[in-house]
Image (cartoon, rainbow, N blue to C red; front, top):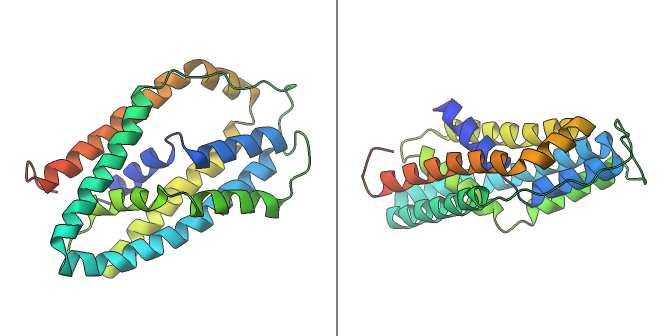
Length: 212
């Protein structure tokens, strides 16, 4: 179960979205250091989202089972939306720079500014609550111990935050920018299929097609 939580968090985290764009922008525009700072900012905002999700789910699961099922469907719908966008991806070329890689490319953006960009981007993203609800709705039950819920939350933070930290390294490679620009649509489509699978699994649990 722990691996599945990590996997679905990773799949949802690496799907194209505002966080991806801001890490891409800062990494390519200001270098690896700014990209890492942006990724750490995203991870910090995730702590906030995980906290209110874990704390609120205890009441929802025990007192409002109907609302919980609605949240499951809402979360599954969000994953379907992400997956469908991935399947529809046509790809796009990434902008080329002068081939310089490493800690800095151009301009001047310190660690605090990069951290701020990532933190606010994730914190103010209206889709972030649905992101966590879609994950926790599948793996939590009324009998799930509190400490297990926090482990699930920590796993999600590690999966998403770790992905963006890794992303800040790999997209500063000129070779990666060329390969990703060429095959992005296939990459996005594979992710889309994975997200649709988890969405169908959630809906199957809600409507008793198979156990959750």
